[in-house]
Image 1 (cartoon, one colour):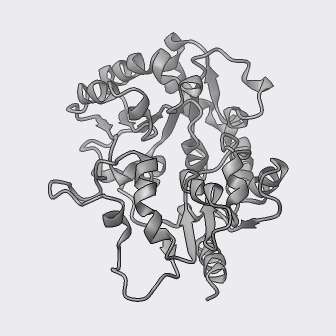
Image 2 (cartoon, rainbow, N blue to C red):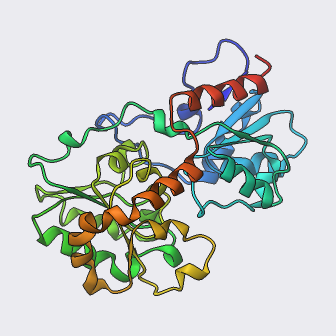
Length: 324
């Protein structure tokens, strides 16, 4: 998002200037093929330099103020997720004019990281107010409990490389649950073969796979699911806005209680053996009551306010930055 530039611009010039034409074959909600991020950012640079405020939801855009620290443009970064996996110490963050963060906990942790000074604003979790999500009734013809499997895209954090193919086969072979397989969009960059793996089960009526649509990032699947099956994806924090059963996959066999970034694994059963996954899924609903309070407390701390005022707070800070 960019604003405060010269009058008379096209209403939505960013995609065109970034070299992202809208292919005519795309269906509603499907993302176009995306070129590499840094060349895209380079193409956008002349346009962004004509704006007074640039709002981004990822750190790649912060390469601009990092490389050109004397620019007059104010770069504001807003959170597209929450939780302990967030990178709070990246040097690019020191060049953001303001950080819009969901909770006081996130703000405190960001400041503690030492890169951002006091340039933080707590807004609440803006994404919680999105109302264009895909409804669960549109995903499956038969109503069953829905499992969401969301492996992380970074190999050292992910269950995909060790267990992913077996889990896909396991979920495809059963018919007690409907299944959404929607990993982080960047996983396909790291393992392009995932397209073939998911395509092999996408025809099944109880399996919904997604690697490309906007539903992967707009909260549709975390809202629809009844059981979360994953490793360290920050989507679990969003899922926990409404406490529900979780099963966490410790495919690397790490001592997760000794780390600083696996606190959300306290919110469900942690499985260290692939053979134990089906039974853990089957008992997740029965085991859930002992995790409800932990889930509630964790989500409240990580997400802050999830009401309708969060987008207004964020918009006010952006307008102030633009002098409006």
